Image 1: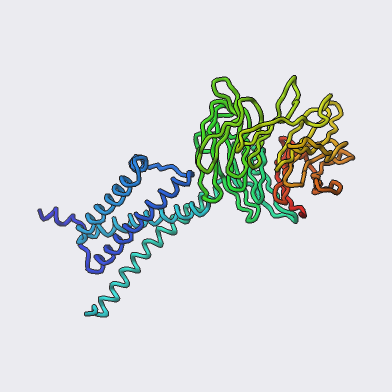
Image 2: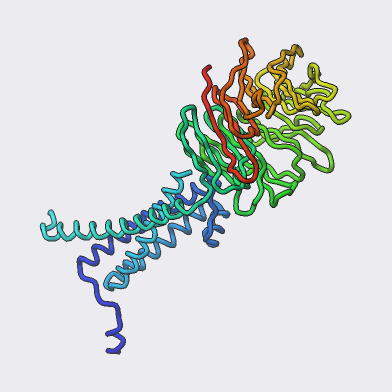
Length: 114
Length: 353
């Protein structure tokens, strides 16, 4: 039991928790931006959805797409916030937010270039 | 109660840290986009000239199928369809998609570009696509079993000739509501301007008449081309308003003639004759444009003439073989191809109104 505890992720301090909170807020907002930009890109007719799961939902309609996309990221962010005492949660949130920011900026530039 | 200053500072630092993560991601996304743009090879060389633009192919796949309307040109670069805004010089790659390696010559109107995409070179079946300049949206408008002509588009109407169940038909689409148009049940290479569609009807090898159809009134009539016959062959025709302009060329001497003819009265006037014509004529309003060999046959020249009067005038002298010359909205564009070993190019020039 002691050995198991020593392998657990180091704890986050109050500052780390505040960073985690803002990262999760950004992640949630970027997810909405990603959804809107993807929908617009597909409507423009120059893009195809390469994620098979999202492709299925986009073909199913707007409401299921919005429900799935927002729902899954909301669950993810709540899960990460539940693990807010651990530094691993902060790394995961930073990585996800960085990747979403990259995707959103790439999509924005791509749409503007059309 | 306000939080203590220490807590506020910590909050600000946390926000700053979170913003830095976004900035790092944004830099990664922007870098990826710029890298992708830098490594894409579809962009031709576009240079501003004294009179307009010069667009030269880079991929050496051959330019073709030039189309012009007002301030935009569309053309084929190998299997790709490109659109250039002549005001900004910005080029766009419109198609084809990943699954369609072949295209046919595009058509362009004030708002729409229309082109076909096929499954392979030489394929007769194709999908018809349109690009809306206003919304920047590309979409498929029809699937065709057997394509028999290039598309032609004017305002929001596009027409073409295709076969279904071994029957040739001139059909089209109203691009505002995607409703299909049936113009005629016969073969022809249609040209549309406004509500009027024109095509040449052949009999015994050569064209014997032009057919005009008004798609809003549902009536059609024929116009007998004035003076076409003997060894003269039709090089092509164009339509603007109620005027049909067509070119003919003597099969033996290659000397040609351009005639403008009113589609209602049949009254004809000769626009140009006596030169070795290089292209079919193009008309917009009262301006007719064509390309011909210079009298010494050393080069080509793009020529124009106003139907309201005045002599023909030279727009440009071209050191290359002009494949097509078009006019629209006071702009002339021509496509030059000197063969396999040198790049093809397109030039544009503004002519005084």
